Length: 204
Image (tube, rainbow, N blue to C red; front, side, top):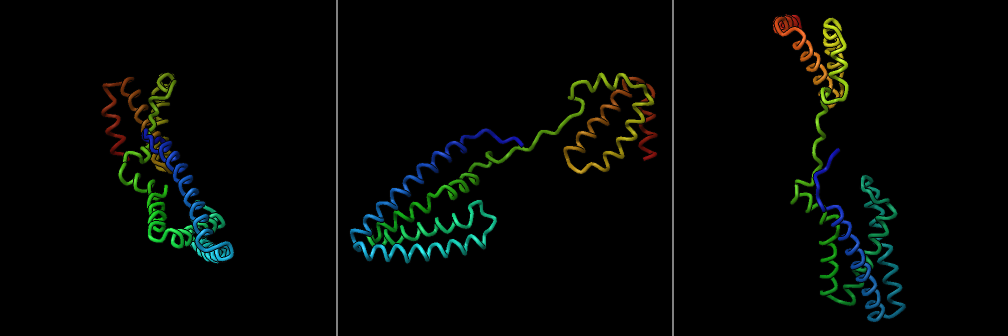
């Protein structure tokens, strides 16, 4: 399947790396501020409790949404870390810390990718080109080697194959081949071709 040329792939990959570094830096700073604000013992207790709650929520969400690309354990870890950062920002930075965390959530790569897909419809996959039997190398040479009776027999038999074709590509290929048979028959006997084809249409 072909895709339209777009730079969204490499750009989104670079953006994802920058976002991860920013989120990691924010997590480290929030941990340091939490430690300085609450003290060592209370920080350990708060981090442990919030991480457990976040992990349980992530596990529950991962079990419900098994269609996600992330494994359940990874989802639990992400929510555990996010919960710890949220509590740390709230304890250390008050409103500004929560605002930073909200900004990270809004600018997360999944949301940006989804928004980009809606804004840029040209990034969607392009339909595959319809195959043409007459464009295959050697087809004209092969048909020219057959006599008229062989061409007619091949055209008759291809109708049964066309009815049993299961995909659009297969049907298009068979239709193109049937047209190639008719073109060769018309080239051989242009005077009688129209009359013969009309009788075949009436019989079908």
